[in-house]
Image (cartoon, rainbow, N blue to C red; front, side, top):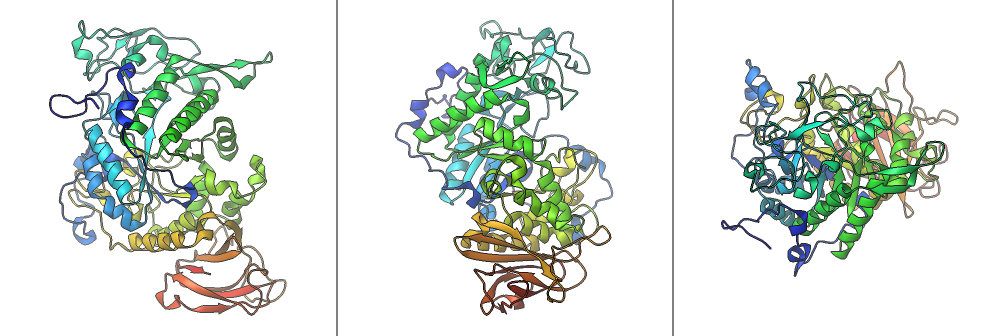
Length: 612
């Protein structure tokens, strides 16, 4: 393994200089999980999660809502100081929460002249940004996570680079896509000026290009790496959303599909460009170097399906050579369930993230403003996306309700607004105990409530620093005694122990207030709201687990709820494993002959129960 004179990893300037064998020789790599639907994911932005410094804990009575918000507001626009070493110090916090897989935001080196703290403006695909730490810090983080029984999913970008070149002339507003190729002034230097030639850089002539100018590794400096067609304006127009730049980020040309005589793209006939091979080799490097367990691939909608498929095949095959038989590829696929299904089938990705109707319906069902049939129907009606079994969702869809973008939705966390905090456990229960691979967004377990006119309000600092949640500064939020943290940890424990809660089929159960014949039906909205007990069953291998939540935040609710008559005939009993009302735990319910088989559920306001 190459080192510099300070004992640090020597960063290769060319992919041709990367010797994967030198990184893998004599190493034992962590095997993949047997199935990813068993995992509980946690997504964090490195810059906003932990900086390793010791600060006082946040105190709501003392620290919230300072009078002068301007410095706090400005701080949210730039680097705040979170690091990989800081994340390392909080792995125990995540383990205690029940997290089994950490999804880490992009850590690669960013363009030097822009505050791209989020990690999506990459300038060097073979290095870690110094704001986050070093490559060795990433390797150490993964090794420690593995020691604690957690896997690590690294957020990667192959669709675009950072803003590494300027169009000619360099304009204040980036040119719009119109199907033609624009001339380029040059690669940008460390100050963002297009002073470097647009092509392979000779460091003898332009030594200032390394390490903060142009784009690296050097193979990406060929002009044909980029489509050079300006910024996407119509996000639904093909080919614009494939060929255009993602705002100021520069689109990479992975190749093209051959077309039928009528102009249709032939998905199975893809002609790759060299840039696709370069991106694939860079991803292999991070598997070999850091022993990561999966990639979350950004903006899959904007990558040609053939390119995604070629990349997925090579990455998975390489991971298998290291003993990672089930290396996870999670694609951000916006545009709804049908498009997500089609992309997964076309490309070989394992799961989809960013399916708009899943997160929206989950959030507003928990808040009492969506029909339960709408949310549970997402899974039951999988035939609408050409899947005959609703179990497809269990291992192919990642579910979450808070995230760093809220694409197409108002920029607000779940807890923004009145009564949202009281409903937060219901959202957590729906996320963790219904089908899909559950993912929590950092800070939700501490009831972060950011909301505003842009994404910064979704990205407060867990460690406090200059941009803490609730408009605070210099107070940390790593509180394992927080009621929501404790709720999640307890629910996650039962999810780990009960196989049906991870892999089971799912059925929304009918309810009745009286239990008399003919009175049972699906929980229904009244006056645009649902204030009721919502029960569902998860069934796997002949075992049924009954879960229920009460979306009435102010009143206790009692209902009869049906269960599976074959598994729970009248005369059998269900035992309470978990309840937000501790006195119910261990209590048994008799199964009675009502609507087949049914039990009488009694839930406190905003309550949650698990029976087996």
